[in-house]
Amino acid sequence: MSTHTARPLGPQLALAGTVGKRVDVLVIGLTSTSDGPEIALGDGIVDESVLTDLLDTLVAVGASGKAEETTRIPAPDTLPVDSVLAVGLGSAEKLDAEQIRKSAGAAARSLSGVGTVATTLSVLDLGAAAEGFALGAYRFTEFKSAKSAPGPDAQPVSRVELLVSSPRAKESKDTLARSTAIAEAVATAREFVNTPPSHLFPAEFADRAKTLGTDAGLKVEVLDEKALEKNGYGGILGVGKGSSRLPRLVRLTYSAKKRNAPKVALVGKGITFDTGGISIKPAAGMENMTSDMGGAAAVVATVVLAAKLGLPVDVTATVPMAENMPSSTAQRPGDVLTQYGGTTVEVINTDAEGRLVLADAIVRACEDDPDYLIDTATLTGAQMVALGNRTPGVMGTDEFRDRVAAISQEIGENAWAMPMPAELRSDLDSKVADLANVTNHRWGGMLAAALYLKEFVADGVQWAHIDVAGPAYNSSGPWGYTGRGGTGVPVRTMISVIEDIAANG
Image 1 (cartoon, one colour):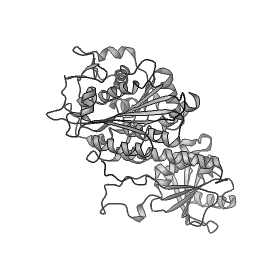
Image 2 (tube, helix red, strand yellow):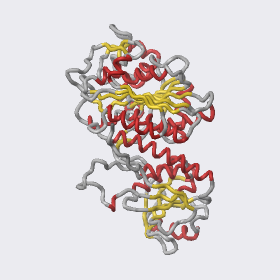
Image 3 (cartoon, helix red, strand yellow):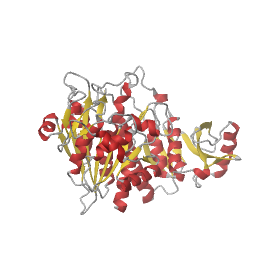
Image 4 (spheres, helix red, strand yellow):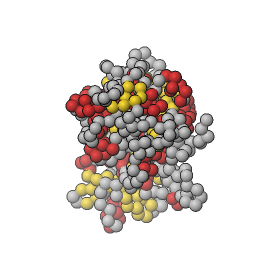
């Protein structure tokens, strides 16, 4: 069993109607206009004459209201805080929930060493402000010893009081509870991705997923290498057999216990480290392959979140976990394996391993006869070539694909619908088996991977495949509410889609 102990993944979030005596910093929003910055007013919670005086000081020190710009000034005597942090919201006309989320995140990142903050951003959008502060304050420091661990003046903010006109209102409490749960799920996915492969290997990942699932009241099933062998999971075994740390398949089931509840299947790629296998990757940047279980991390966090939110939808996550290593027992280019369900596959490139583990899991997930199937994976470098580091690609059955992309754009994860051109399918034909795992060219690699997966999706299932190769892991500097490392994408997309299915079928 895992000996890992969970830690708090973000600041304490609370509702407040006034700026309390224990608050250290007040965070306010500034919009930018052609006449200079303006304060996004605090609904009477903070005296407007005080805010007007603050604006003069902020302008004097160069604050512009540009999105995510932070400016901190000493507080006037009229406020019971030490200082005021103004964060830019950009143009007032273009202000939306995602900008508030990003600005709140930028504010949280700049407030290291502060105990308690209060903010008026919650007046503009309570849920977005709560999520932004929680995720902006997230840090991963588990492996820093006393030598380099952040001291008291570099600790993330520990408490955020979200100012609203009626903190006792049920609507405010419900919004905060939902946003807190979402932020915790995104941070949980980040935590999995950020844990190094020395400490998160298939068996350990399975144990941690089991603990999370059990604590949330889910039904949990873990198949070890013997059960995988017995049941014919040739894809997962093929990928995992080069490693001394053998593969797993984890199933987490949340039942809404409602008659005729819609059924959603989630599948996520859980390659705890990807060397490429015998088709080995270049050494430069290979350390970022600690993120190759980003899809699995997201679906584990999402099924637990669906249970915490008590959504009237049955959700089952099927999560294949393996480590792709080169060794004397590894699969070779040219080998043929049999996927779960009987399809034979010629493995031309052992670094196209994600689709092999996903195919097994998709066939298993479809045996439950779901209405909807969402799979997500850090699947192809081609995703980043096509769409960059922050835009997930969505492929699948047309109607559901477009619905997932639209919802993702609405909530700020910005997935984009992509086609599956029919002419690419014949390039996956094999001379010796039913399918080859890659085409013999580099064109449309993300689309070809989706066409491969499509072969394993049961007829009649509404399906979306979300490729998050770039978006699941931020290897450059922090921005908005996203720090370096795991991002937790696409947890918010998946939970929003499940909520949409609950509301609209």
